[in-house]
Amino acid sequence: MLAQWATRQVVHTLDPTLITLEERPQRCPRVVIVGPTASGKSALSLAVARERPGTEIVSIDSMQVYRGMDLGTASPSTEERSAVVHHMVDVLDPTDECTVGAFQRQALGVLDDLDRRAVPSVLVGGTGLYVKAVVDRLEIPGRFPAVRDDLDAVSTDELQRRLHEADPTAAARIDPANRRRLLRALEVTVGSGRPFSSYGAGIDDYPPAPFPLFGLRVPRPVLDRRIDARFRAQLDAGLLDEVDALADVPLSRTAARALGYQELLAHRRGECSLDEAIDQAVRRIRRFARRQERWFRRDPRIQWIDVTDNPLAALDAVLSDFPSCS
Image 1 (tube, rainbow, N blue to C red):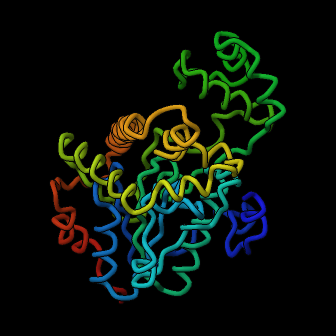
Image 2 (cartoon, rainbow, N blue to C red; image 1 turned 30 degrees about the vertical axis):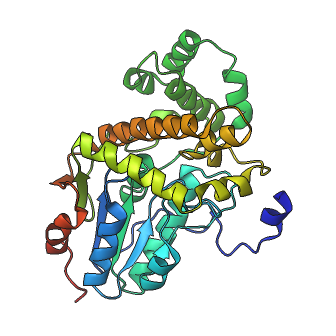
């Protein structure tokens, strides 16, 4: 199975050398649609694109980048991609790592190309950090695996102490109990020789957005039902076959985190029943949706639209801020 992925022709790759982060003039309308999983973002983005012929969609999703994982990641169907051009979908094999920095550079390359061609676009996704990295063109520090491996053996208290000595500004901004963020800040500070706090606006800064941001807000009981129904529909559509095709593939660290796959792979290995796998997957997806909601609620620039069973109820509001190209 690994050979299947290794020999496939790669049409797109997440190449971090493609572009610089310089600002370029935006020549055509652009909007962003965000929200938790199963809120109807994709359906709304397609409706917007159809109302504005020539519009293209840019997926800002850390899992839709993977080939062979279309059903479980709710990637646009073949028919949807035929109707509207989609970018940043199926650009990596599941053995490949997807980092926010590489994704950002590839996505910004797409947006710059759309501007050069004067093509309007809709950015749609639920991966909060990826959305922010693209919208705000965050300056993302590199990775230093050897430094990180050394630091990973250090206690959380010691990480905090070292960060306070090396970069007190960053240390003051990070919860002393948040080991992951302490480790990342110190990795960058040590590895790059540059304070982590010097890398421009951070994830908690919200500068004026270059284009409108809309968020879909769904009542929690409704969203829970939608998540359950969608996962079962994915199973009916052949998700288990998709999982079976990945069973012998050494999934990358990021691909292995895809919602639902871990549980169904455990079922296929005989570690749990199918009902147990479904229950665990749905619970995990619901928890993920809560985290998405919390992330996006922090962004004061997002215009929230309340929708229930019909995400297209937000169509007029989005179109009002999305005129045709002049």
